[in-house]
Length: 354
Ligand SMILES: CC(=O)N[C@H]1[C@@H](OP(=O)(O)OP(=O)(O)OC[C@H]2O[C@@H](n3ccc(=O)[nH]c3=O)[C@H](O)[C@@H]2O)O[C@H](CO)[C@@H](O)[C@@H]1O
Image (cartoon, rainbow, N blue to C red):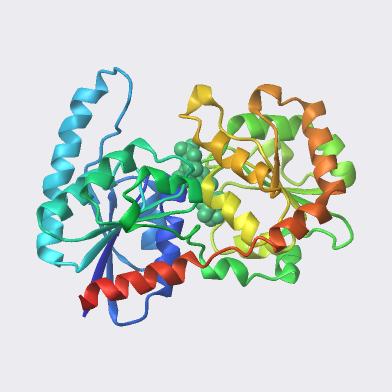
């Protein structure tokens, strides 16, 4: 039997592309997963009935912190745990999606001569993938420009691996779940898989004005549901949405989102006009700003930087996006998004046959 081990975690963006590829592999494949003990990947993968191994994982930081020392030990521990799992499982190939937990896994795979395929979702590679690339043989990117960071001869621009079931929702089911009307436009707010407190605050401050025009679905992240707003007319909150997301997307007319690569490629594939409010440089390496700028340049999105986020600017941008929605939809329609999943699956098949 052909065997592949997937790895990736820390946030859903490092897991959902793995899920997309797993769903496309036929029954001739045996699949297992290595992630951290407590990350979101554990829940998302176990829900899909895939064999899951947790290993120790440490955060890799670019700055001085006392935890760097203890985390180095955790990474080393993770390496030996991963090696033991890989020796027992003997996969033909490891597929790595990024996130800190993947570094010891790909290092262990490389030490055992197991080929590693690696996918980078963001416009510029994160620290984990910058380290992991030294242990990988084959590279994939979502953005064309990102290929420059990897060896030319073994890198392919494939786009983002999107879960096939995200395309199978129905508007009818979405309306049923939300109890919304089919007459009014629906705005979906998605602040990244872990939520975005700044976006949550801004949306709630603008809620009375927003609900005069739109019905609002707000995915606000774990622990961020506001109980005082439960039952408010035209407003539905969710911490995180699993398989029902496809239905909510089918009834969505426009979206306000963080600049996480997977989310914005999904909206592009579904032709949903988007206003991106990227995670600012003060809280990140600025990758979401680059993701967003690339989408704005291509005419797929508009962008509002967090430092300019106020109730007024938010309302103005949302109305302008809605007024110009047809233009965005036509540009996204013409973009001809590539089929990342098929390309990666073909390569995995070929790897096992060689
Ligand atoms: C804070 C942080 O470090 N964010 C990073 C993280 O974002 P994050 O984890 O938010 O990742 P993305 O926005 O790329 O992807 C989120 C994924 O979760 C799914 N989803 C989300 C909410 C929900 O309720 N249900 C659901 O299924 C989305 O459909 C998508 O597939 O990884 C991305 C991909 O490397 C990066 O671009 C982001 O900068």
